[in-house]
Amino acid sequence: MGNVFGKYFTVTTFGESHGLAVGCVIDGCPPLIEISESDIQRELDRRRPGQSQISTFRNESDTCRILSGVYQGKTLGTPICIMVENKDQHPGDYDEIAKLWRPSHADFTYDAKYKIRDPRGGGRSSARETIGRVAAGAVAKKILKGVKITAWVESVNLLSMPAVQHTPTDEEINATPVRCPHLPTAEKMIELIKKARTMGDSVGGVIRCRMEGLPAGLGDPVFDRFEADLAKAMLSLPATKGFEIGSGFAGTRMFGSRHNDIFTLDENGNVTTKTNNAGGVLGGMTTSRPVDFRVAFKPTATIAKEQDTLSRDLKPVKVIGRGRHDPCVLPRAVPIVEAMAALVGVNALMSQRAITL
Image (tube, rainbow, N blue to C red; front, side, top):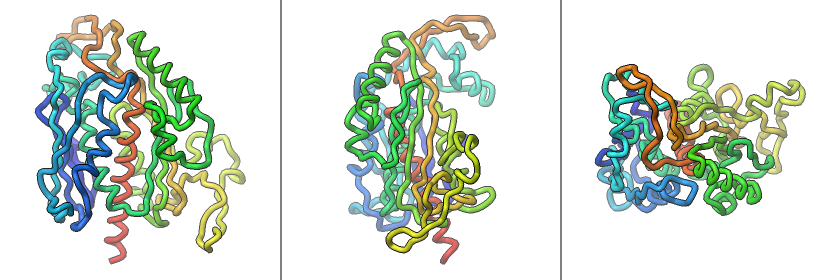
């Protein structure tokens, strides 16, 4: 089922949305990495439900427990198991959907592939699965010393913040619950998300992320390009529908003379480029410039509006979304994007170390 991510630092996530627990097993983590439950909890708190009026009302503390692989605050080099119990379960909300296929959900495709599915909150297709990814990302960030990974909400629906050259600070990003660092735009986004919820609808948008401090040469040419691994990581997230790096699609409207990143030396005599239209990757390998990319998220598929669909016995039926869902997934997806970026970064770093041994 594709439950394992990574080649060197591997992460297996487990659990269903309304099962007993969710979490991950990490293998390949080096020994002597300092990590604690509080380090992991800090990241989980950023993605947990019930944070604000623009997120799901599901009330979960998402308290993590490290079950193995860590002793006296340091990794042992053995598999690390991290678990989060599901407390606020309402499986009865999903009795109806066991008999039908919700529009734009994985219900139909799960039935087509496995002939069985867990309808409670979408089971494995629920974004609750990403708890394991965020927990693993917290460990990966500990290995990536000197690397800063920063994600923020750049647009919601038709609302976009002004273009920025600098990377926003954590304080700017977390100043509002929507996690957009431009306050005037953030306030409009919040009102739009609230309006969508009131109408029983939902909205999507774009998250931007930068990885700063990566050395030049991470990644490989041809199939294992850094940006290809990054794209797969991001498009493996629930509700994602697009990925672009650097100038992305806008680069198709530029002449090569403008798009090319000219090599030069910085004030310390290190090789750099005057611009970063490549998004920090050339030929599949990092350039040492910030890896700069965007991820597009669709509107939340579960909405409180009546819609037409088909039942499992192929009869036309009506469905209204039940349960507790985000009217916009983007604010809580920010730490998930960072976590997946960290997993790509740590695998690339370990691959490079293996090559240079």
